[in-house]
Length: 142
Ligand SMILES: *[C@@H]1O[C@H](CO)[C@@H](O)[C@H](O)[C@H]1NC(C)=O
Image (tube, rainbow, N blue to C red; front, side, top):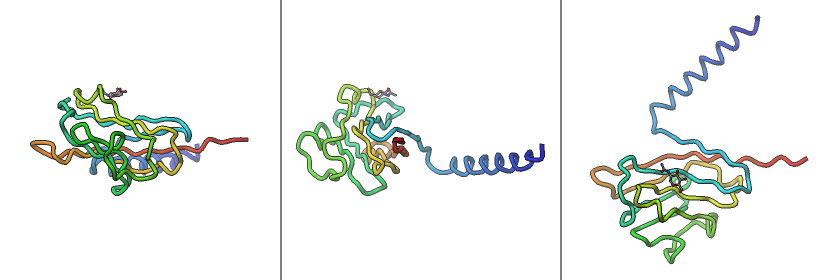
């Protein structure tokens, strides 16, 4: 029972941290074990058709992960994708018309961990950016 005040303190601190996070943009956290594939979710609440639109996935604000512009993207001729993601990213063409710009990262590596953004720079009436935090955990081997 002597531990109770300490537990209380920890809970209070946790509560403060999560409250603090709420003042910034909402962040979706995704966790996966190294070597597995993972879907990073990004869906417009308006469910607007994205087939003729532009969306851009970046890692840590700088690395180009996946850029789609009206049907042209990194898997069909567009250049500029970061080496780290070459051949490992795909989107869901059938889902675009439902406002779904989610992507898959195949064969995840620990180095893929980080903060991803899914950006709709030309969206009207207002640009929208979604934040996804990916944590790739190392598989423990004995
Ligand atoms: C977006 O598409 C992916 C892949 O098909 C699917 O798993 C996910 O549930 C979709 N999200 C929504 C909100 O429909």
